[in-house]
Picture 1 (tube, helix red, strand yellow):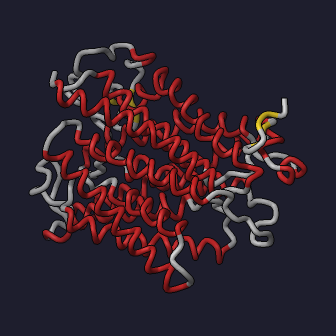
Picture 2: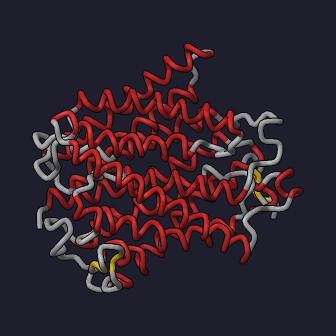
Length: 408
C-alpha cells in the first residue's frame, strides 16, 4: 500500500465525480429555458443510477474474472472480495475499493454524456431504463475489453490511457444510435433553439477542464512522473483546441464563447486516450486537429438534419475516434514504457490496432444501444407526448421551473 498513490487516486476520484455536475451545467446552459431542470436532472439521475449499479454488478462485469476476453465474471458481485487491501491485479499500490470507485465515476459520466444528444424530448423514466441496461450490457463489457485483465483488446495491445475508447467513442456512438431511435425535436431547423445561459455553459466547461486532471492524471494510478505527463498533455491539448476553435469561428463569423468552450472540451476528449503515452508537443497537434474534425462534424450533422442536440457524437464520438487514432500515431515508449511506439516511430501495427479498437467498439456500441433503445421504447415509450414537448420537460416531467421553483 502506498499512501501517496492512494491519496492521489482518492482526489482524482473526487475530481472525476465533479465532472458529471459539470456536464449538467454545460448541457443545461445550452438547452432552452423550459428544459433546463430536465437536463440537469438527467446528469444527476446518472450519478444516482450509476452509483448503485456499479457497486451491485457493473464493476464485476467490467473487472471481474475474465470470461473469454469478452466480459468480467460475477466474482465481484455486490463488491464481494473488493476491500481495503490492494487488488492482486488492478492498481496494486492502492485499496481495491479506491480503484473500484475511480472506475465507477467513469461509468457514471459516460451515461451522463449520452443525455446531451436526446435532451428536450426523452422521457426521464425511459432514460433511466436505457441507462441501466446500457451500463450493464454495453459500457461494462467494453471496459473489460480495453482495461480488464484478460480483455481481448487489452491483450491485443490497444491503448486507451483514460477512456477515449471506453468513454468517449462508446458514449458518442451510443448517443447517435439513441437519436436515430428517438427522432429529432419538434421544430428542429425551423425554430430558434438558442442556449438559455452561456455563463452556465462556461462554468460547466471549466468544471470539466478542472475535473479532467483527475480523469487523465488519475489514470496513471500512481502519484509520479506519468501522472505529471498526463496533467501537462491534458491542459495543453485543451488549450490548443480552444485556440484553434476560436480562430475557426472567427473566420466564419465572430469568436464565440460557446465555440471556445466546445473546442476546449473537444481537445480534452481527444487527449484522453493518449495523455499518458504522448509528449506535450504532440498534445498541441492532437488538440488542434480535434478542433478541426469536431468543428467539421458539427457542420456536417447540421447539413444532414441530424438532431444530436448538444453535439455528443460530433465532439465526444468524433473527438474520441481521433484521439484513439492519434495515440497510434504519436505514442512513445519514452513517455510510457508500458505503451508502445506509434506510427511516427515506424510502428504501423499500433495504428492498425487502434483503428480496430475504434471499429469494434463503435460497431458494438451502436448496434447494442439501438437495440436497447427499441426495447425501452416498446416497454415504456422513449419520447414524451407532443403537448409535453411543447410546454417543456421541466414542467411536464418534473413539475419544476428552473427560475421559479416547484409547482407542487
